[in-house]
Image (cartoon, rainbow, N blue to C red; front, side, top):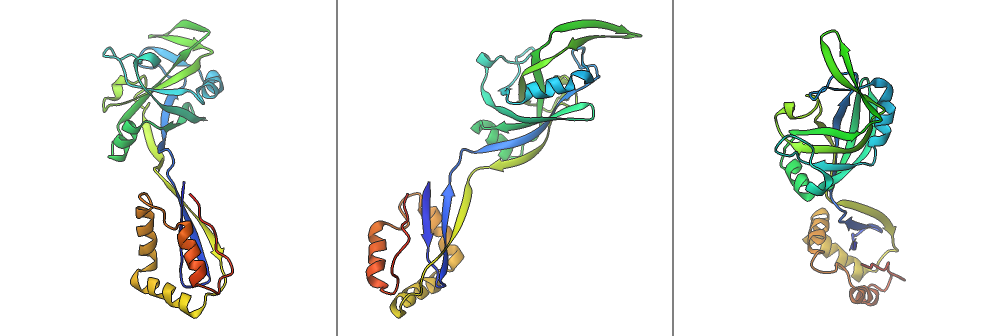
Length: 243
């Protein structure tokens, strides 16, 4: 993490730190509908909602489907993140996915929003149920082992038409932090130097420029700090800036 020091004419100034964190996106999806027959004829009962919700948290996000429309296995595809949290809303399970794959992040950044999802897992039993004209398989004590995520505008590919990304909650590429620092008054010569810097460069523009250039070189080295000590005699000590 690089630390950049910007000096202004007043007694108070700020240390700015730019931390290049691993980029990620947090998106919300509708993962499962309860007490409703899915496209493949399965029903997940509301009584098992909490079991499914809890088992979904922390699971991997696998990308893509096979040509037959089945979930790709972990060894067949890439893992693009994990399920950060999940909650029960009515008769649906909503989940927050933390996506870290650079390719998917670029697609999201470009404006794509047509992503579908589908949960995969295991159950203690699959029971065939016939009710009036309906036939379906009721899953007994289902637990999620992963969630599948892929880009498509055809909602029929998912088990439920509503199983899709609903919104982007956060998109982070880098972060900035500031810390206020107070020093003593400088002497007349030192103040003239700092005032000239302030006149030559608009303060905010100077900060932005130094942040951009800091990737190539240090903003302030120990040698510069020592020179400032010798020139600005009224300052008894300087704050050390390190990389």
